[in-house]
Length: 393
Image 1: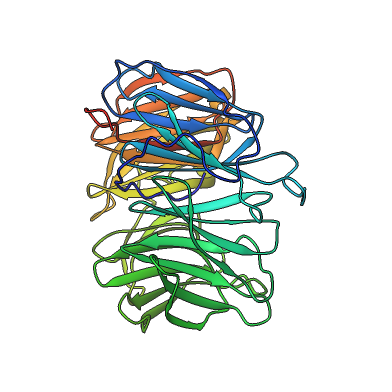
Image 2 (image 1 turned 90 degrees about the vertical axis):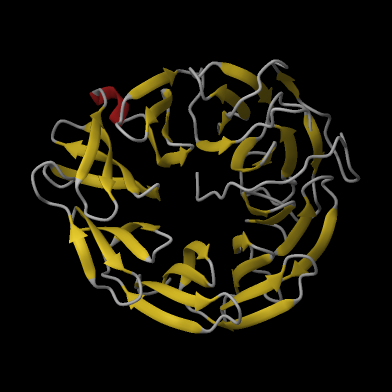
């Protein structure tokens, strides 16, 4: 699982495109569901939609591919998958689009240079895709039809580029000998701006006129947060983090939340000023923390999941993002600790969802009440909220 943005796009009814090399796979559906669902993917090739109200299965799609990435846009969920093993240069990866409410396949395609593990990002009705094998070609794909809009071939054949798309711009980090961070027009692929950037981005979020990039130096492991102007890529501020800082969430107000020395720290991203940190009774760090899995900031709350020692129990909780005050915490059974995937926490519509090898757990985001738990017959490797339309697409 990775970082996902929830966007909106209209869906098409196309059932196939040029380049398809395998038959459509099967799925089960329930046409009467008309509410939000949670989409999960597994390494066994199953994509499952479960209802946000009770966790019942709405539909399933089964294939022989390993699911790599899920992104959702309105009433469509996009699935990227590969044929195991991921280092097989001869097997093309599969991209598919499914209607959220009933699992109907809208299109699927297998492009020539998408091979191995696939990463992708969605902006409105466009998918941006790269892969770990192949010749390094980057694809922009029409999300409604599955047709290729434009491609970009890396000069040095770098594969699996970092991709993040937002507001008509796609951001790429590429290059081995001369790494650059580049912004391209999402419609045409034209370069808008570019600059040298050694640190490989691991996280990007855009708020208004600013872009926040969290990067890691490949050779030194040095970590930093860079604030850029969305207009021209100009550097506004740069914050160098400590070497052992882990996990990151950035709020719309410019707050950066990290795990440092087994505590959660709230920093001002522009200058590193510490706003608060945990460690008092009732906060993460009260116990010996093995490691924090994931941080999410939403609705002025900071959600986290961590493994506690020595009891080896999973803790899911929420802090006030402004003050660090503990709002709620929930402890799972010890068996859940070995069943967790990381990162594995997402939030949507005042709820928090945790994906584990024992199914999905749904919490009320305000008070931490466990709403439901569903136990599928396979591990859940990925999870993404998807908003289902109340009317046919």
